[in-house]
Image 1: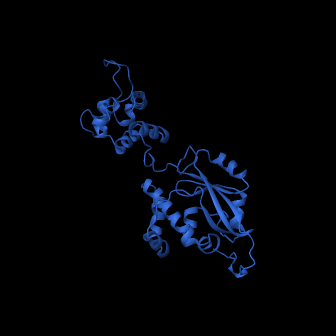
Image 2: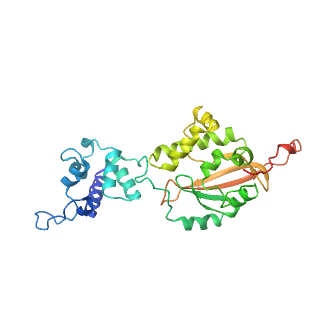
Image 3: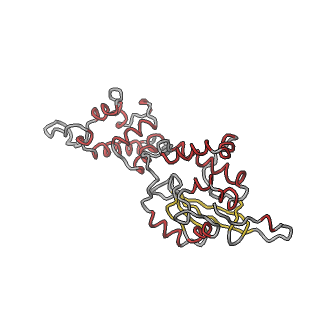
Length: 293
C-alpha cells in the first residue's frame, strides 16, 4: 500500500470510529475529563474488546500496520458491521486495505432495494428495445412496454402481467423453457444457472437466492444441467441467444447489461432482438405458438 493510501486508510478508520457513539455499542460515554485528544467515539481498546480480537490488534490495524496483523476480509467485515458503514464505505475500506473489492456485500439486503429505482424506470421507459431492471435476487423492479408486451402476447398469466422474479421464470416456467427461450437447455439454462450460483455464493445470507438454489437442486431438469457442470459465467453482457418474439418470430436476443452504482449487484438488461431472415426451407410447424404457462 502506498503511503498516501495508507494515510487515507488510517484517516477513514479513525473517522468511522469517531462517528459511532459508545452508547450505541452498549458502552458508557467517553469521560470528558479524560486526558488526551477530545474524541467522542469508542476507544481503540473498547473496539478491540467488542470484536474479541487479541490485545492491540485493532490499534495496529487503525495505525496501518496491516501486513503484520494478518488482516483479511472477515476482519474488515467485522469492523464495517460494528461501525455501521454503508456499502460504499465498506468497499472503499476493503479496497484500500487489501487492494481488491470485497467478495460480497456488507449487509444481507444489499442490492434488494435500489435507491434510484424510480430513475431506472424512466431509463427503461425511454428505451425502444426490450429493457428491464432486477435486484440482486432477480426480483423484477422496473420494465418497459416492449418487455411487458413480450409476456402479454405470449400468454403469460401472472398477476402483474410480468414475472415477479426473472431467475425463477427463466429456470422453471414452461413458457420460458418451451416457448420463448429457444434451445433453452443448451443456450440458456447453463449460463443462467452459473450466474445464479455465482451470485448466491457471494450472498450467502440472502434467503431468496438460497431458495432458488434449493429449487435448482430439487427440479430434476435443472439439477441434471447443474450437476453436469456450469462454467464461470457471471453476466450476460454481449451474449446472443435464440429467442421467439411474439411479433417477429424466431431471432437472436443480443443482450447488454449494466449495474446501478447504488446497488452494484442489481442489473439493467437491454435485449436487442434481431429477427432471423425468412427462409423458404423452414417448416411453419417449427415456429412456436404461445400458450398458457
